[in-house]
Image (cartoon, rainbow, N blue to C red; front, side, top):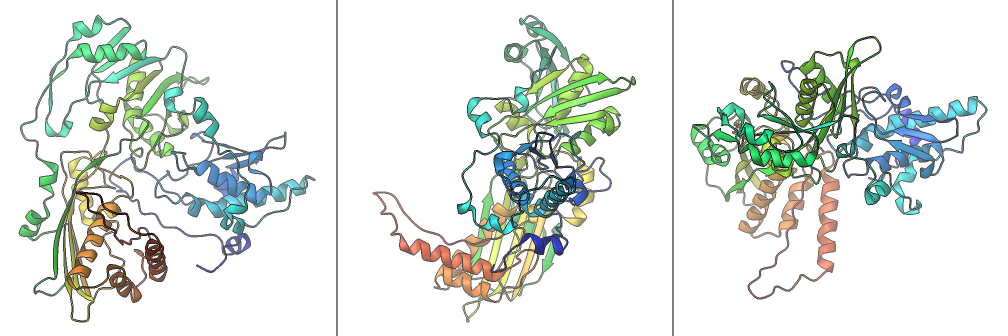
Length: 555
């Protein structure tokens, strides 16, 4: 893009209007709310202390993407100060007004204008009060990162020195520790708890209690310290009765079985009958998030001075305000009586958008009438978290005599992503199927121009908690599309890069691809750069190759 992005142009235009990919269903309380950030919101994010420093409450959570540093840089540029003069903090629900959760990889795009405008307003107020602010800098300076001095990014010193930044670092007076004996299958499959060794658990030094609570999937063990929990889990020797039927999720989404039935959840476009140049099947397995930091939560109920009950929750979540709504529903408290103290995440990428361990901690704290910390193990992460659903693809391509694709049919079978089974019972998910699932379908719309194309998608609830995972459906869908493009280029004896560029030349812009010409430039430059480096020589028994895929998600 050649158009310069200037602060004044942006402000004069009134900002950027952004739509949201995540949706919800009015039948499902509570649902994540996605308010568009406003100037009034942003004015609550930045302020100046009496000592002359600036404090920025970062409206997005830090999970390793350095959003703290990115938004601090925007604030510093607009205020005309060094980045070290801005203290950036992760807010809880009591520090700022409701904001959208950290999803969609759009933090800078959404927050740039309101944050920069709020900083400009703050400078004006300083001037009105006789405090001469430094001269403003244009946001366009963000396009020249090489000219900016190197600064220590927020929390980096804390990370290398072990200073407390995660939920696991929270310590409270009188705090107990708890763990859940979780079944290896989902409760909805009919798994039954046969029993566990209560006497052996009670004999472990540090034992406090063992409970069965509504809302928690298995027995809750409570100890005085974390070490006791490991011994209690081992002593419990919990026994489960396997559900009568546990179907294989990957077989349930077999695309050829779906095609044989001829019915899809969503189906659009048409193609002509006839022989196909390419008929490709691709199966992508499920995947766990496996974030570096296993999740943790601490909950504490209390009584305020007016005699009303309160709840404080410490956790690492991508949406603290949604978490607050879930707590309000679970415990019948007004949201004003609940404070979520959000912490840094050791990786999230869609996996920290649903209330899981947070609910367990709150139920446990209420039952024990004491602060309780729950720390999931790596095993808990795999059995209690949700996954990228498996997907099965069949892409059929017909290449005409002119070397261009005349017909393209991408049939996809998978499970739900946005309407996640981690938070929705089967009947609710069935209701949502009439609108499909934009998360599963993300990236299924190929960026190329085809004469005719058809996109079909079948959604099946599988016996596995599924949900958002690193780009939603874009990863598997783009992989299937690009594999089919390679196969079509090879079958029609064309260079794969030139083949793609021909199909980008007349590609229409749309929600799936804002600027086809830009994608073509990126592809061509990547190909040119690859030609400058000689390919690596394959060793004995090894095969070496280069690919040329191109893709774009969220436009």
